[in-house]
Image 1: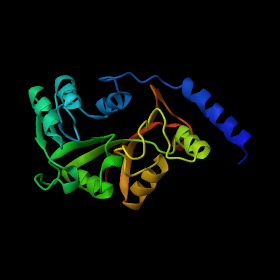
Image 2: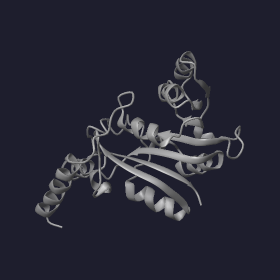
Image 3: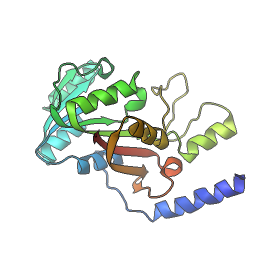
Length: 220
């Protein structure tokens, strides 16, 4: 495809995105807003890589969920506990063996999948202990990442991925299409898929236009 054709395609999709519905923030993040819409009230929720527990605290206060979390950083665990959230220190790459099957209604993994050593194992464990999994991840297929790589010939650095290659926490570089293909190969049911560019939902060409993808999945 010629550069001019690619440019026109991106501009057309961008114009449509700018007219798409605006997504509000929850705790300064649009993916948290989508997650908060997906989680039903009065349910049991486990957040993997929950940081200092701010999303769990918000869900507990506004959706009245039974909120639990797993976080590898001891300092963040302490801050989460100070918020009144039940969080324990653990490495999600080592599995969720302490939890029985279907212990939770929702298991959340937000902006962490690309940092795990064994993402498929993590996803399978999420769907073992949870009836539904909510997975949000940055889309490495976004046009800005493609152009940065094309024109610099170096590991892409964009607003979404500002790190130098040697300092980046990201070790797996997936796109929207990659996740769709994985879900199909694993026979997972995709209940919802929401794509975001900044504060707006993306309705067309999500693999090219979405900065962040949020999937709600379950086992078939």
